[in-house]
Image 1: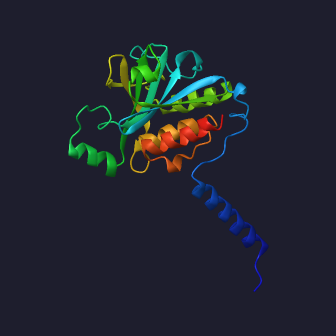
Image 2 (image 1 turned 30 degrees about the horizontal axis):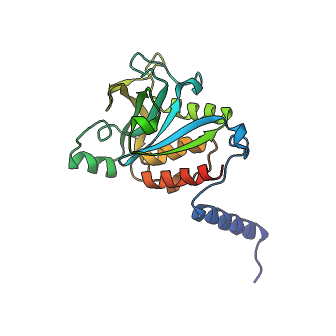
Image 3 (image 1 turned 180 degrees about the vertical axis):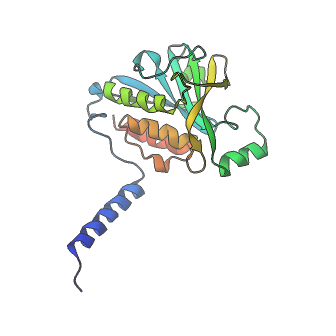
Length: 220
């Protein structure tokens, strides 16, 4: 039986894509995440709090694309997470709110927490993984997060409500929340935007995000 060379190429490409997916972790983006850790001087912390894995960054490294707002926390460290606009801000969500978040595409929010101490101290006992990224990677990560802030007619982020901690706030966000597009997948996508070797599609849970982040950290 004769096989078209085009079909053979497509079949080979499909096999390679499947292998990549099944491997569970994409490789680093070389131009953003160089192999030499000395070329990646900026720390980014991945922290698991309950079912959520979020990012903690040092404010001094954020680029000018990160928005300003009177309710935006001003602190040396910022923890940033994304999630459902009803479930995430609710300290005691009902079963209905949980089911809505799981099964119904819904609006989303960004949670920004200002911290005056490292994540390992602020969230005592939480699982924290430290990664190092390049300046270029940090710019890409900042742009990724900044894009998710929903803006008003003046281009300013839209405040949603006060946050879950003292110096924190929720802001209305772009994008619909639904399974499997979870808060943890969003965190993995943010890391991937900085070139980190992580596969967002395999990060629906916080534990998977932390597992992949740990593998990335061990490469250093």
